[in-house]
Image 1 (cartoon, rainbow, N blue to C red):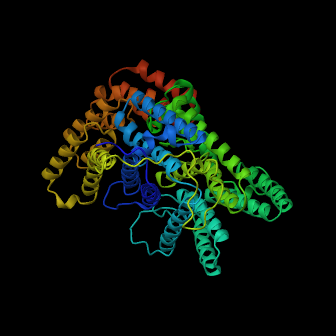
Image 2 (cartoon, rainbow, N blue to C red; image 1 turned 45 degrees about the vertical axis):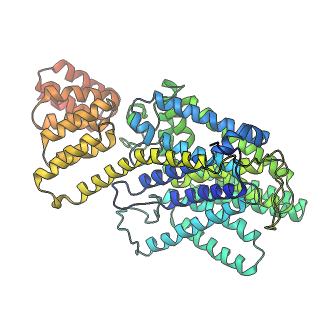
Image 3 (cartoon, one colour; image 1 turned 180 degrees about the horizontal axis):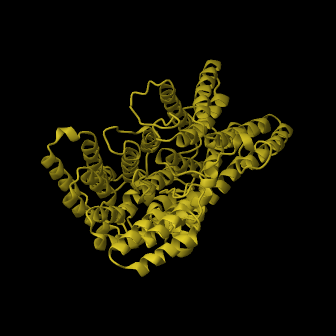
Length: 614
C-alpha cells in the first residue's frame, strides 16, 4: 500500500467542492440548542471540513516540491511559517484550552486558524483560473441565502427567537457588522457574475440578487460592507473599462482615487462626508488598539496567548476610555489581535502571506488579458476589500474563512500559463511542470488517513458541543430538574470541564443563582486553578466571600483584581471595605489615595473618603 503521488482531476474537483462547501457551511452554520448557537457550530464545521481537506490533500502536499510553481512553493512556505508561529504561540499560552478552541463565543483559537490555513494551502494546489469561477458562484449563493434570511429578520418573521436589542439583521453571523462585511464581499462576487454572464436573463437574475444583497447590507447599519464592496466593485469596473479602452480605464482609475479619498477621510471624521460616514465605534477601537500595543510591548515575541485578549484587556486598557469600564475580548482588528495575542511569531508570517499574495495577484492582473483579467480583478477586489476590512473588524469565522479561501485561489492563478480562461468544458488547462503519477495500489491510503484524522478531530470537538448543549439545557430548562438533581448536574458538568475555564464560569454563575454556595466555591476554585487571570473567577470568589461575611478570604481575590483591573474603582471600594473590616486602615487609605490619584473629585473618590471617616 502506497500513497498516490498526485491528485487526479476528479480528486482535485472533489477537494475544490469541499473547500467551497466548507466556506458556505461555516458562514451559514448555527445550532439553536447550544449555549453558543453561532460561533461554536461554525468552528465545528470549519475544523471538520479542514480536517477532511487535509486528509485528501496528502498526495498533493507530499508532491508539492515537484508539482508546483515557484510562487506556489513560496506561498505554501509562508503558510507553513504561519502554522509554526501558531504552534509556538499556542504552546506559550498559559491556558491551553482557550489557545486551542478560542475564547468564549469567539472560537478564534488554533484549531480554527489551522483549518483556515489548510483551506488556503489546499486551494492554492487544486484550483486554476477556470475552476475559480465556482468560487464566485458559491460565495454569491451564500450571500443571497444570507440576504433572504435578513429579509425575514427585517420583517419580524425570523423562525429563531433571537434576543436582539439593536439592529435585527444579525443573520447567521450574530452581528450586523459581520453581516455587512460578508455581504459586501458577496456583492463583489455577484457583480463579477453579472458582468461575466452571457445570457441576458441570467444577468437580470444576478442583478436582482445584487439589489437584495445590497438592501440588507444597507439595512445592517454598518459601513464595513460598503467599503469592501466599493473596493471590489471599483476594481472590476476599472478593469472592465481598461479592457474596452485603456484610456477609459485610466480615467476610471483617476475618478476612483478622487472619489475614494474624501470617503476614506470621512471614516476618520475628516471632511464634508464625515457626518454621514463616521461611526463613533471607531473611537472605541482606538482604546482597544492602544491596549493591544501595550500587550505587544510587554510580550513582543509570542504575545499574551492565543485568543487571551479578554483576560488581559482590563489590565492594559487606557485609564480614560471612550466608554469607561467597557470591556472587550477582541482588539477589533485582525492585525492588532494577532499582534497582541500571538506576537511577532504570528503576525509577521500573517503579514508576509498578505503582502506576497497581494503582489502575485497584482502581477497576474497586470499580465493577464481579456476575460482572465476580469476574473482576476474580481478575486483581487474581494481580497483587497477583505484585508482592508480586517483593519477594523473581528476575525469572525463565517467571514474570515473566505479571506483564506480567496488567498488560496490567488495563489493558484499565479501559475504561469494560468492567465487564460477556459470556457470550453472539453478544453483542459495546461499542466506544465505537473507530473501525474497514478497510484501504485488500489487501496486508498490517503482516504484512510482522512478517515483517521476526522475521527481524531471529532473526538476533540464533539465533547465541546456536548458541554454547550448541556449548558443550554441547564440555562433554559431549570424546571425540568429538582433542586438536588440540578446541583448534581452542575457538579457532573464541572468535572467534564476540568480544563475549560469558560464553561466553568457559566456553571459557577448557575450555582450562585441557585444559592448553592458550597457547589459554587468548588467550581470557582477550579476556575482559578486553571486560570489565575480569570476576572470572573476572582470576582465570584471575592463577591461570595463578602456576601457571607468572610472579608479575610475575599481580600486575596480583591487584590488580584486590583492588578487585573486597575481602573475598576467599584472593586477598589469593596477592597477598602474588606481592609477596614479587618482593621487594616493603612492599606485602606492607600487604596483610597489610589482612587483619588486616578479620578480626583469623582463619586468613587468621595465614596472612598467617606468610608475612611466612618
